[in-house]
Image 1: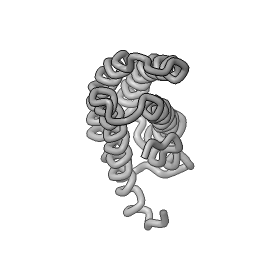
Image 2: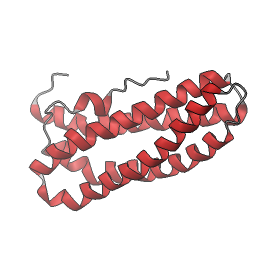
Image 3: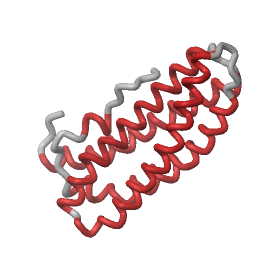
Length: 163
C-alpha cells in the first residue's frame, strides 16, 4: 500500500480494526458450525486449525514487530504493551487447547466437538476484551507515530484462511 506518511499511519489503526473484525467473524463462524452442525466435522476441524494459525500469526506479528515500533515512538506505552503481550500468552494457552482438541477430532471421525466449542466460547470472550482494549489504547500511536518495518503483513493478512 503506498500512502503518504500521514495517510498510511492513519490506515494502520483502521487495518487493525478490520483484522480484528475478520478474526471475530472466523471464530463466530466456527462456533456456529459446531453448535448447529452446519458443516461436516472434518471441515470444522480444518477451519478451527486454520483459525488458530491465523490468530497465532497475528499476535506474533504484533509481539515481534508492531509493538516494538509502537514502543520506539511511544515508550510511555510500555506498561500497556506489556499487558497486551500478557494477554497474548493467555490466548496462546487457549489456542493450544483448541488446536489439541481439533487435532484429536481430526483423527477421530464423529468426535464430540462441543469441547472445542466450550474453549472457543472462552476464547471469544477474551479476544473481544483484548481487541477492544488494544484498539482503544494503541490507535493514536498507530495513527500518528508508528512506522511499518515489515510487521504489517502478519498482523493484517492471515495465511491460515478459513474463507
